[in-house]
Amino acid sequence: MSSVKRIAQEVAAPNAADVDSKARFPTEAVEALREAGVLSALVPRELGGAGCTMAQLAQLCSTLAQACGSSAMVLAMHYSQLSCIARHGMDSEFFRNWMRETVWKQWLLASMTSEVGTFGDTRSSICAVDVQGERFTLNKDATTGSYCQHADAILVTCRRDATAANSDQVLVMVRKGDYDLKQTTSWDTLGMRGTCSPGFKLESHGDARQVIPGAFADSSAQTMVPYSHILWASLWWGIAADAVARAANFVRGQARQTPGSTPPTAQRLAEVWEDLQTMKQTWWAAAQAFDAVEDREELLGLNWALRLNNLKVACSEAAPQIVHRALQIVGILGYKNDSPFSLGRQYRDSLSGSLMISNDRINAKSAAMLLVYKDLP
Image 1 (cartoon, helix red, strand yellow):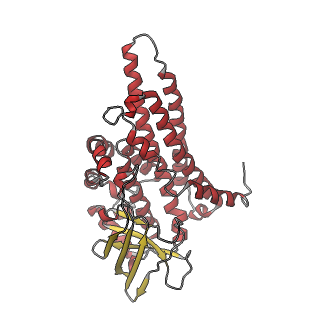
Image 2: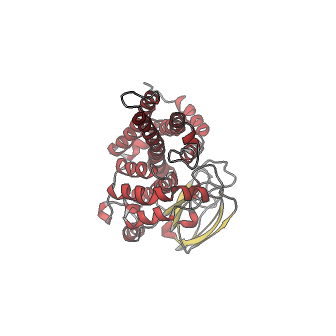
Image 3: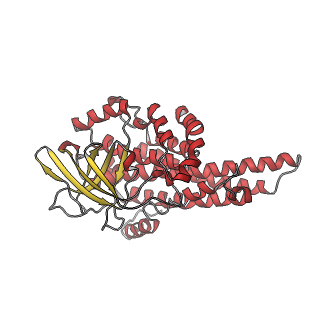
């Protein structure tokens, strides 16, 4: 944690504005995380990693997000990919060796779960992996590829084979040097500009052992979705916390100008602070509950599916509301981009949350589940 705090303050924060303005990858922050060994934080101890829990990883992401939302999102998405290997590849000697290697080489994993023609449904694929003997071939036309041009490997969703149903998916790790990327769209976005996630056409090949064992349906429900939603929620909180901290500094400045009296903005600060703490308790409780799960089969149930859906929607909607209230406290100095109290980047980054897997899509799935879920409070 101390290393990430230092990186956030000394590396990520000073470069955040440039990363945002140029929509460039946060190279400095990622390299600092690599040098500090943070990228392998969740690799099991038996393989040389730190074996960090979900709660610990969430703390790392929220800390980094208070300095640079894009850097934190890259770290969170990397963890959501690495967790699939760490939790579903332990019976594969290939992946066990790969994880040992990533502890000292600090590989960065990217994500490619979208596809042209599936309309945002990550649990459906058109492309299929073709395994011939000990080798595979996989080509995909993705609508987004999360920081793929800057990664050492990419986890790609696809159909199990050419005869499989669209929902019968597997995860395949394609390694740098074994794939070609052709960028098909731009990445000039409102926020989260440093994540550098345009569309790509992927052409790849590799060792057949790079297909992660088991069905993606299981690794998605038991690992990718929980890690994504909890870590995303923690970093959205970090962005909101940064905004509230700037508002607090502004209010303290007002108080120093009028000793002995409380500025009118102080009450509004107290109110938004309550919302910030409530948001933290939401993702912190989910992280602790996840760490307490002893049987992964429990994560396949409706209870966890609904809880994670609610977490994602609640935190993605709370973050921009909190940043907005912080902006109202600071006023014009928060609106100006050249002010030390500027909240433009935080506001724009926080708006991405409800769009990363559309809240409308998630609410629709929750509605369908509630029709059969009988354990309502």
